Image (cartoon, rainbow, N blue to C red):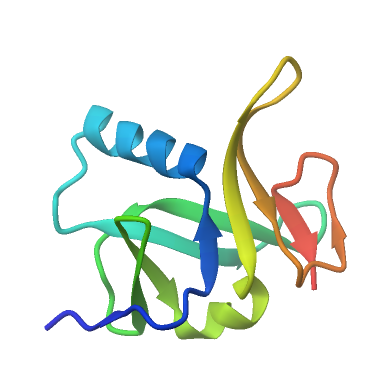
Length: 116
């Protein structure tokens, strides 16, 4: 049984991010039962790297409905991600997902890793 939490959204997905994620989901034929996994892992030039990709739900996941996407997040990652905004940027020098995380003490130049 899938329990979806809707009261408090731990992260924000901008309209641009949702549009790009839906495009990726369609282009890569992601299975319908997969959700968007948002998390962290050790590594990167600042200590932690972000995890963003489609995945099957695991036993220790919290499930949230955010802007029409089912978002999967391990409970232990919430301390690092609460309040984060994920956006899609497309500019002359940068194209991709950007992470604005109020919990990050420092971020690297590329914006994909951080220290907490």
